[in-house]
Image (tube, rainbow, N blue to C red; front, side, top):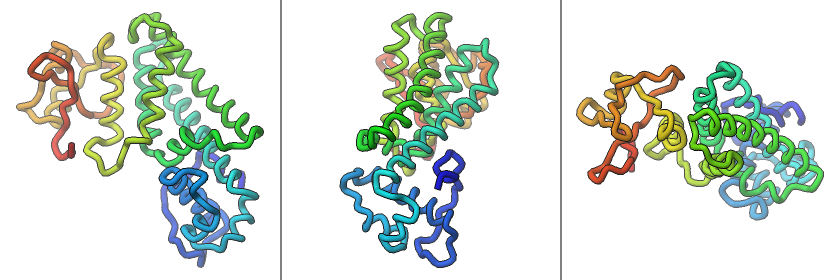
Length: 270
């Protein structure tokens, strides 16, 4: 079981029939179905019988992999935090330590995309971790503290060097974290915004007011069309080209009264 309670997940979804599956495939399917069901219904509302039916096995078979339903919850939350920490450290490892603005942007983009691309376990982590046993809660809380420490360190550096307003860095860090951890509650894959576009909006919201991050003219034209390239906080959006690499996403425009809003690209529903 321990080998699959890690960040290394297959993107494949296995058939619900138990025929021909290995033990590892069954274990992964149990976790995938449990993530989705607990996210949608809540931990207390999902029974082992419901989960077994969704997986396509007998309820007794679940106990071969997990002693209890709470152990399934622990597996979901622990591997979510393991994966989030791994993705964050790998992303930051590719950015020079001296470039605080780029490291902050990388941190935001990684956090946003990971939370929306893993929205089921991320939502379970936010809403259901309180149902963990004390000994399991200690483990997950330790991982959470490690992740929070990364944010606290970088936000503190950002408030001192300029990319972020000079506010209390603890309050700022947890305000940003709160906005990120709530993403799985409202994000829908069929919605008009892709994970990268949501990440662009978060970077704009938290970083652009002090450290404008501009896109190239070609990228802007691809996103919103030549007739919709608009200024960002009164600046020409193609005036500067940011040194920190990014994928094209949505840009901020100005409405008729001068306040900032997001101008969606073509093909995305409201």
